[in-house]
Length: 224
Image 1: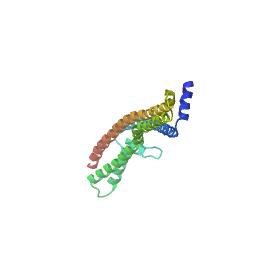
Image 2: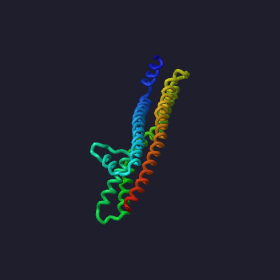
Image 3: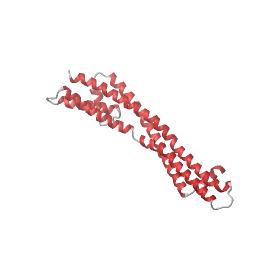
Image 4: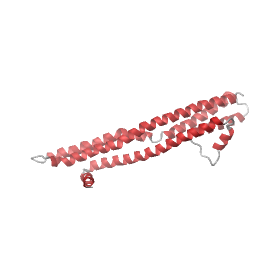
């Protein structure tokens, strides 16, 4: 309890610049943790949705009932489902038009799927850039607070005839706290970014593979 109180006292007695640095790093850490937890749930749900949809997709001979279910008002499509919905909808619409060639129908469906895929990629990559920014800049922000605290310590030494450890301990301590806070904010953000970037890349590859496989199915239907 005494140690915690002393720690708080050091922060309260720190210079305004160091306090601002610590406050900024604390906000960055809290924001990154909120995004880490949110992104974890988003990616977990995206993987589960992809697994569930692929199981249903490959188990059905007629895809029209699957499309009708996904495009229903009371159903919110996500991930791979949106790619399927966009491709199937465009394919059916173009095929119903008179004078449309098979290649034009297939190209239109593929274009609709690419648009849906790009939207899903954008959604999956949301907040990853923030985690990367926190991970790369927080140590330098903490280093700025470190340098400022050490600079204040040396400035205090210039005004006395005889220096003692106690005279500089406060400045050195607040400087080290700034360093530790920078690492505290950066390390989880870097780990999460690397993990989630890899997870997103895997999901994108799955979406892209499905798009190619579905295009092959539509190609067969377009030429029959």
